[in-house]
Image (cartoon, rainbow, N blue to C red; front, side, top):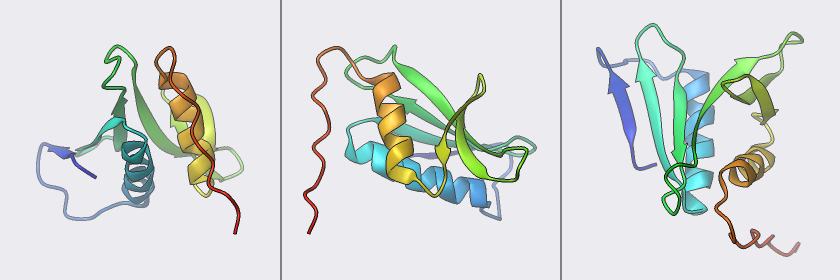
Length: 112
């Protein structure tokens, strides 16, 4: 991942949420998005995602547990994206939300 932005004092412990967000960031970078993990002491970590071909298309991603305790990625309004165990599904959803007009659909690798 290209950018990990720590605000305030340097974080000494990486949380599970940060690990999940870093994995999502890596997948989204492979799809051409600009990503930035934001970690600020006292705040939940978030992933800033921007479409560099249309910078107005940007969003923050959070990791939270739902009422049943399932940990998932969320948009901040809050809208559930996908469980953290479904990384490709989450990346697909974020890509659909932030896709510029005319963006070609992602090629799905052939099954082996």
